[in-house]
Length: 356
Image 1 (spheres, helix red, strand yellow):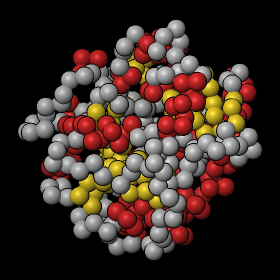
Image 2: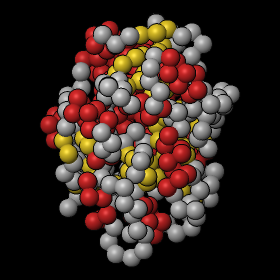
Image 3: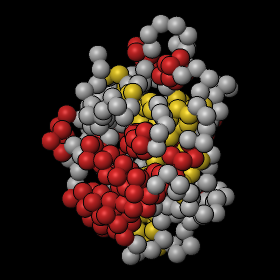
Image 4: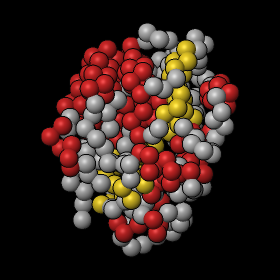
């Protein structure tokens, strides 16, 4: 049984199966996480995008659209320097990026196969899906595509959960953490799809594993159908009337084509462990668990959309890429601290509750 997502087969092969996660509210999720339940087994159904989200998405597409197009073109160019590249996007934030990479490569006379699969901190990469990709493209160079980095958790998870034969080549549009092998920029910026979730990602939910599979090392690399072992997702059917996936991918494609195949990455210095500044600030506020600290405008936005935010750091009170965060923080009574030398545009931390 396949997921009725709204991504085109011309853009991506989706390696996710339908599943039935434990559906919880944000408050219930936070309580379960504090009791040690794996984040990868829980899901909060997505609400329709708020006015703040919609406004932030459209503003980012208008304000940062041309730059985002250049970043997509530059990353495509970097990946196509390999003789046999395959884009393996990390669902969800990497999925629209991978689709755009494939479209640009096709325009520029190259075939860039694109698959999307799940990676979950604490669970690792979906090894069954990875095995299927390797079987389809033996000997190819796999590039693991994501939208942005925060403090490098996905990079660490890749390195720890990939087979030793697969290099952890992380390729991103924005790498403020300084951990990706390929990056179109090391600047922190609001990529448009960071402001929305399922409605620009084929209606796919965040990925999860079933309770009985959580923590198990997937041993299905050889033989048999991988479908029964795949990580899962659900389609956010209630949001189907609001889906903008096709329009967003068309916009990324057109913006990337405008930039052209000779576009180079931005010449921004690679940061060195910038998250340490944010961890220190969070610790001073009483949050010492690094998993609760989310540096970067994309990760901070997700805290406000999916978690219980307890603090927000901003480099500037007037930067347009973080206006939506300031608005949501003021609306929810979350303390805001302006740190002019913050190495990210924004950072947020999650409420630790009674204990971390």
